[in-house]
Length: 328
Image (cartoon, rainbow, N blue to C red; front, side, top):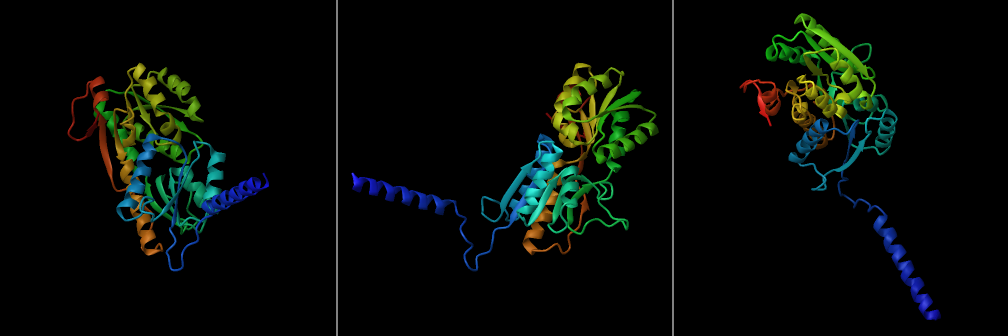
């Protein structure tokens, strides 16, 4: 009986030791290069923004950096559209001291840069630093900010789609997020563009995605001819709700974001989300290769395109147009 008890205790002790050893990180062997930690912060869960994330990691992988090859470790956090959760995510990521942080959308970028001046930040789907309020009095942006930005010039070209596709349209409608600076700035640019085209613009504010359906329906009751989707997190997270409401009233949806066409918009002119992330990922890979930021700086997005959804075009009687890339 005693012998059996002793054997059981020895077995239990052995299992505990093995468990401890398996859970304890292995020290880096002498002379072995430590695997860099790459952090990625998303503000919201969204299919369009996911394309940018995919592009970022594809660019890293094609340049020799991936988890599969054990050349990087990845730390991912998604705030699910909640500001307090975003702040917690940013603080946690910074505490882990990654080699770099990729930030997807404006709010992720702003909060990460404001709370960290040392770790390089590679922005994606964000406006130019001065538009985001990230420059000092001399107009200089933080020295640890890199990646790819967009200006508001693309809004001007996007607005012309209204006249091109619907020459008789008199009133356009949009919703915007009052809490997002890029949404307010884009609205200002949209108003100017509509005024130049002699198109009346109805704009209603929305605080979060739970309000999208009600606000969109209120907007549709104002007899708009076309809905224009601005680039903000509320639109990204609830776009299918907007499309459903507009489709029920036979109101076409135009936008400045190419990724939203796949999700139901009729047409867009704007940055390719995948390529936006890919371009930032190329910068991040260069940083990892050379071990410093020499020669790197924030740069404007390079790939923009006109995209049209085939099924929506058929619904609204628009013929195939060679100036657009068609998606199903």
